[in-house]
Amino acid sequence: QVQLVESGGGLVQAGGSLRLSCAGSGRTFSAHAMGWFRQAPGKEREFVAGISWSGGSTYYADSVKGRFTISRDNAKNTGDLQMNSLKPEDTAVYYCAASSRTIVTTNRAAYPYWGQGTQVAVSS
Image (cartoon, rainbow, N blue to C red):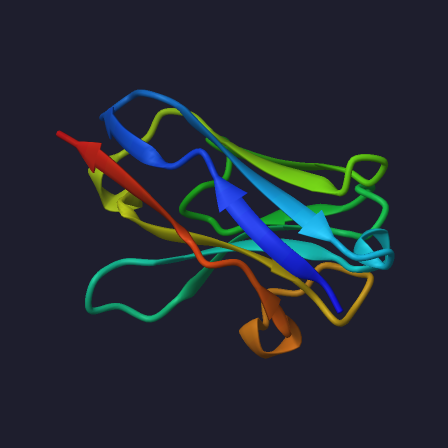
């Protein structure tokens, strides 16, 4: 069992930066790939970025590639999402998730463990 808690959301102007953090509990945290998803009002929850269990492999949605960076520290059971050059269309609730797999996947169904979400709002 893995429990996840996100932090770091907030309101920022377009072009600004935010860093989201995800704190995991449970001895098996490092055995799971991690992902960040987001859900804007009236839209489906979508994959944003993912990182393998070791941190050696990452994958990004095209919409955030070059602007967002995912990382993890298994010694601390934490994962981060650094978001730069934010745009109004990045506004959403962001969720941290742990996958049932060790490798990155964009498939939401492969993530059985979810945090409660943190709001990110980008003003124009």
